Length: 327
Image (cartoon, rainbow, N blue to C red; front, side):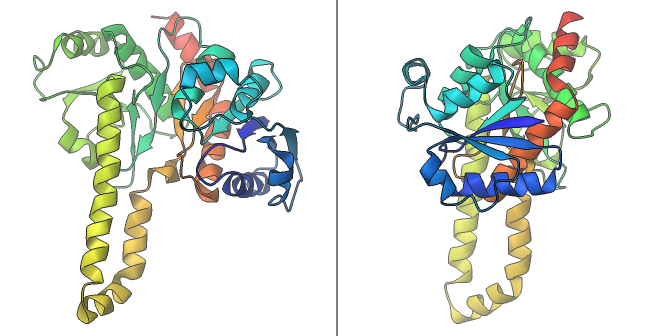
């Protein structure tokens, strides 16, 4: 199995990307990784090149670049070249921690979508209080969704959750402003009926306040709403930890308490870190394309590689294609 990794994408590239890649090849004997990026910079951190190769390029898509224009104009960028390796059959999947919009554009225009999938969906796995996590899709790939798109999201999310996350008969929920069947706008009302008749284990409408309680294994929504929910959860978690830190360093007494609680707080922070589950998958493409968090460290990049490997091993793209054909 061979994966293409954009070595120059993200806030901590290429160091953390390279370290994560080395950790991955040590963990998986069947894995080969192609690092795409500036060779001299990559080699500064590559202490073990066993089953790791480099494709050199000086061109990089920046976080400030307009996504579609950047993909079209920067054809020799590390991200576009990594996607091109997948499209040409030289790699089985690709990972990048770079510009999210550009990666979605590269996935759509370079890798290509599965026939029958109208709109790909961007889907991270987010933490729950019980530690099981839930898949949220879409979080930004498709802001103007139709009911049929939400049905396809439900199907793709259910397949991924079962095959990769090992959840038998995943519970699918439709994000809405209330749990009653008739709640919501035209989009959610029509999507409710479609998903209800799909044969999936549909638990009905779910509210945003219940997401971290683990109300469903797969939560479906449009990309506009999903992106706001994702950013709200992420921002709230960061703010809470800042407030806890400020409280625990405000006096000598609280500092002593913090020293005692430090191991427990680290464990809590790890539980709330969704990078532990891997990156956000761009579902509906011909091959796995994973968006790692922009601030990914080596461990987060390793988890994204592990996730991509699992998707390939379980033939997730093929299963999605077959499921869509049966619709």
